[in-house]
Image (tube, rainbow, N blue to C red; front, side, top):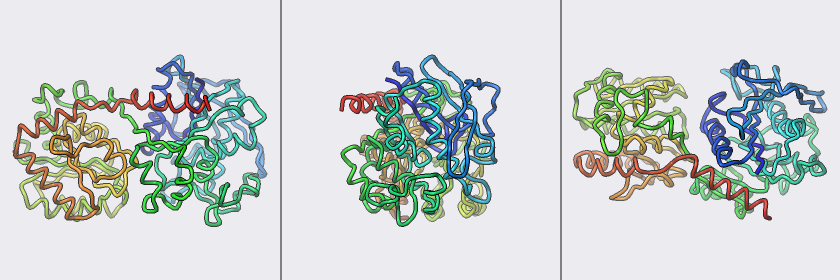
Length: 476
């Protein structure tokens, strides 16, 4: 198959969250399966051009506000995989991807219309006729609209479109004046079959309406977004399209996240020989200024400090949990109130709590390896990655039963993790107490660790599911 993959961020070149990780990994796995894959993404100012090669082709997109032009740059990591970077200094050479310290950029509708429509024109310029056009989140929301409305009479018209929703909360919502600004036909400004959303324009809604198939990043999240509580006001539309909606669990990079080869660790280890995990535990405690020889259980988090992640619930529960002889380490950054909350927790519990406000890749790996338990009390979690890292490193995850956390963590008596249902302090506290009981039974704890380390969360398994979905679309 020929696959055109469009994403607003692609790791390691650009990343704000899980979308970047997926866009960096899934196309490579599909290419490894023998498919010809071209990934289209912006060339942000943070992406160095030394490794990129000019294709000799340029985009020329006409909008009512003017003609936008820019070169197409290329990088070919493998014979079947080519990354195409759309260069546009005014749109993409800025201090952030979607916004800066003052908020989201005011012209994001133009910036991602250029990506959405430019991806199709780039394919034309390079003579690439895809079988599948794979889109990701609202930033590519106009691609399936353009594919159906403007490209039907071209060679691209036979392509089937697939939209992956990574997080339904982010929808690309703009004032209705963008219809005229972008030259979108006003007949598309309808609630039933168009982009209209409570008298605004919603890019994600348009993509949901016009794509041939929809996927989300876990099976449980695919069900949750069809309910009013998790549907972000699009649940009705998603129920209407449930026949083309599939949940495919994200994978993880099993080469980067491998305790047997991880260069960030003081000692490597595997499921059959866990001795190195104790060395990682000591180093973790030392790095946070805590007693490295304590026998107390170590609880850890690595998280974006945001409302979605349930950090407020964690901060409410930890003072009571720390009345027991436990240690708690946290790595993350985000909303100031949560950063301040973690600092206050460390201040009130010196010798028990260590915090690092910011992002440190090596320290993140060390938390996954050195902690005994990893806490994820999310309000909602489309997929989640850290619980899979934890399982792979023999660190028992304590997670709320939502989204991809349900699909990856076995909370049974002979499972590999601990789940709690209600988003409530009592429920999280009870889960922490179950963890303490498990820690008091070393053989049972060891069995939990080994079961988790035996799970397969590789991208290869996920890629094969996408491959089957694509093939089914081409036979319809």
